Image (cartoon, rainbow, N blue to C red; front, side, top):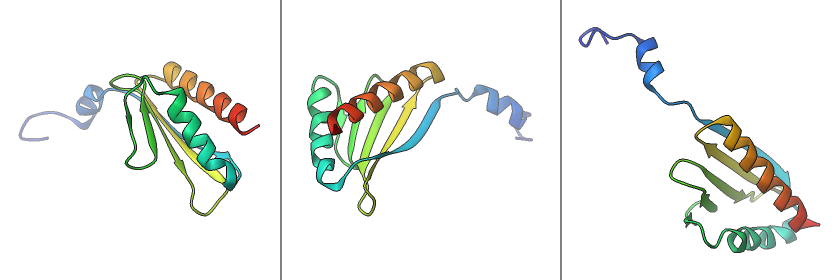
Length: 103
């Protein structure tokens, strides 16, 4: 910092803000596979990754990751978006879909 004559505040201001949220959604163990399959079917036209669960890319910066919990009757839902508005919209959309799929 000293060598380049910059402050932490200046560096912090250059880092773009983003929205990140984690939530647990109650899902019975026997429904976890169904939920994962439904997510894949619902997002079949989108870029996805299956390394750590199911990661669906909405665009270059916004994504959702769903991971079934091995020990609890929940799935973990992680959302990252470029801003709070789009992140909250994604969160509500996928939470509603999951609630519909488990009923």
